[in-house]
Each structure stands twice: as structure tokens, then as C-alpha cells.
Image 1: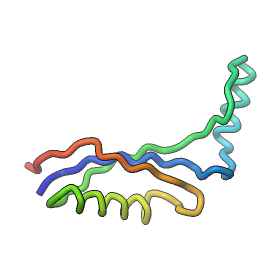
Image 2: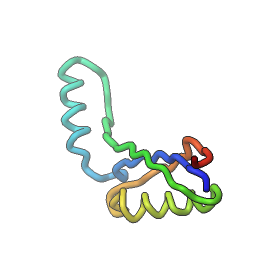
Image 3: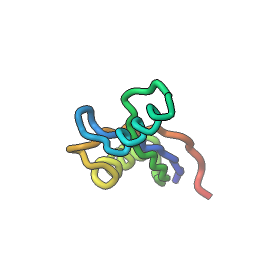
Length: 87
């Protein structure tokens, strides 16, 4: 078995209100920073044990889609960070 470390970057879909981003943008503008379209997201890291990369990717996509995101409101980007032999 091999171990695969993934990162899932989760962001709100375009058109979905981001109250945290709006509040942060207001504060930054009050501080005289010229910023626009401030949006917040989440970065989740997790390891998957699998026989090969393709199986690990399939499991990681399933975990991300079924557990980590709300597919109605959020998008995600999945990235393999590291692959190693289990112990």
C-alpha cells in the first residue's frame, strides 16, 4: 500500500454570497487598500492509503464531493501533494 497526501481547495461558486469576504473587503477599503472581490475558502488536507495513484484519486474525489463540500454552493480543486510508501 502507498500513502497519498491530497489538498482540497474549497471555494464558493460564482454568484454565492460570501459574507466573510464582504466584511473583510470593507475593512481593507477603510484602511485605504484598493482591493476588490475578496473571497474566502477552505484548504483541507488528508491522506489516502491505496494500491495506486488512480485508486487514490478516485477515493479522494469521492471523499471531497460526498463529505467535504456542498456541491450546490461550492467548487473544489484537488491536488496531490505527496506520495510515499506506507510503513
